[in-house]
Length: 378
Ligand SMILES: Cc1cc2nc3c(=O)[nH]c(=O)nc-3n(C[C@H](O)[C@H](O)[C@H](O)COP(=O)(O)O)c2cc1C
Image 1 (tube, rainbow, N blue to C red):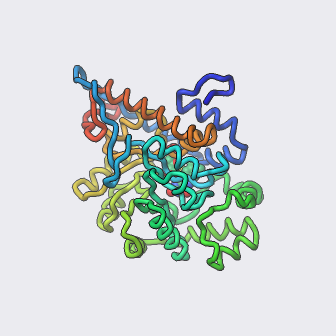
Image 2 (tube, helix red, strand yellow):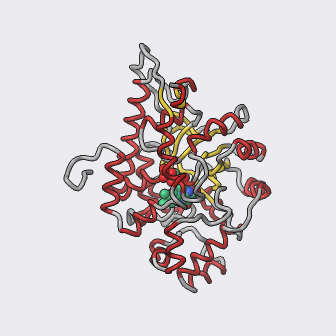
Image 3 (cartoon, rainbow, N blue to C red):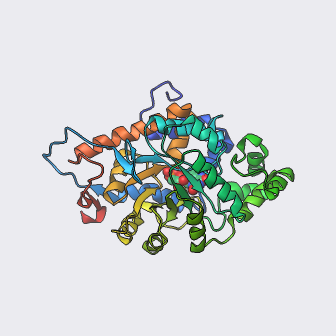
């Protein structure tokens, strides 16, 4: 895996630059897109610079432990892969390939319910990998139910319900395509880029696909834009015994409601800055969420802007059990398929290991909160 000039790639930034060269312009713009003025997207990355690591000194850090668990399942490090749709832009085998890369890195993979590869294809590609299934609650709940049942059958270990999408986000990609029917029309016009898991025997979906690509886009937006409430979490719990994780929580209040609703985990996330511009950087609200559910038996993870091992260490110190990476995994996939995803994860692993030792810590499950401070302490 080399840069255009043939130098081996050793940083996430090199993967980003190379992916930009290798992806089609549509693929790059879809992956890089963020809503509004990209304030939340940019802030999610720069938030990590607002925190510093306060190293402990003269400790024996010879043996360091990066392995941990998520909902009781072992993983080799607290860095997992976030759900992202439309991975065929990056690789012909799409999510099946990235799930394979995550499994080879011995970490957890979350499959987007809008994936190009089917749930079965992904589990065949990574039969021994820990996989969670991301879900939206579609207006026609039979579609969601079908996906849950299929995920259960294929050995997925949790349902990740994304709750930050009551309305369709203000992406420039979609805005321009709504206006011109260009990119999105191409996106859904190419059958290989269509979501594989929509249950095609449901007449509305079949009808939408038959009647044209832009209508499918509109059909899906209509389905997202149905108000769902805490009652629907009760419904979800009634149809599955898998643990439920809510993704897209950014306040202590919502975290408490989630704990009251009996969820097993929370992902503090701003959807990679793609949903609403102006919401906080996930890292900034992580401590508020962690303290809101303290003692309630709910695991808290975060995503958004994680680009280095020190970023991971900061998130762990602020209370995350694990972090997820979205775009960096897509960059790895675009550069070299499963190997690229594995390489991106191994760079972060190496950097985390080094940051852990240099800061005087030996176990990712035991990072003292005093290790991290907001810069203003200086
Ligand atoms: C191209 C792309 C597609 C995404 N698709 C989904 C999705 O289908 N479901 C979902 O819950 N989140 C989706 N996300 C959000 C990611 O799961 C994650 O929250 C975000 O990418 C994390 O930020 P990062 O890209 O800075 O790591 C997507 C993100 C990107 C970049």
